[in-house]
Length: 114
Length: 112
Image (cartoon, rainbow over all chains, first blue to last red):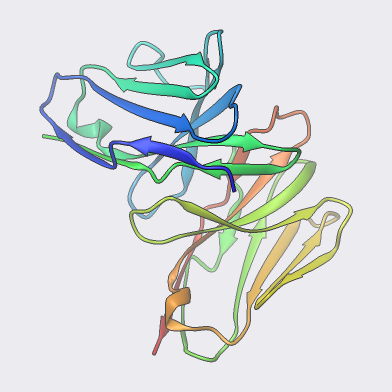
C-alpha cells in the first residue's frame, strides 16, 4: 500500500529555535497533504492543508507565520515550527489522501521544546 | 474543524470479551472511517463505511452507520490484549475537500 514517510520521529529543541518536519510520499503523488496536531490523550486536530505548488490553507486559530508549510513537489510536504515554545510541544502527523476514499498517515513526530 | 464525540472515553475489558465504541458526528458525510493508534504512534486505518452503507465487517470488526442519527459504532469481537490502543472515528464530510474530522477517541484496554 501507499506509504508516507515522516521524519524525524522524535525531536527535542530549545525554545526559540525552528524545527522542520518532513513528509514524503514514497509511492504515490500527493497533490494535497494534511497536517494534524495531537496533544497527549487527545484527538487529532487539523492544522492546515498543504497543496502542491500553492499556498497552504490554515485552520482557524493556527498561526501561518509560526507553522510554515511548504509543498514544493508532489512527493514532499514540510512543516516548520518557527521560534518554538514549550507550548508547541505536541505530536504532529501528516496524511495524504489516496484514491477516492483512502488516506495514508505518516508515523508522526513527537516534538518537545525545552 | 469540529470534532465528533466518542464514547466511552475509556473502556477496560477482559480478553475474549467484546468491545463496543460509539461515535457521533455533526455534518453530512461521504464516508466514516475508524482508525487505531497505539500510544505515541501513527494511525492505522481499520475500516471505512460509506454513507449509503449501514453495516460492514472486516475480520473481528463490525461497523454500523446510522446517518439519520449521525452515529456509528465499532464492535471488536473476541478481544485480545494486542487490541489495546486508542480508537478514533473520522468523517470525510461532503464539500470538505477530503479533510478528515476526528472524533475524541476511545482508549481501549484489554486485560489478559
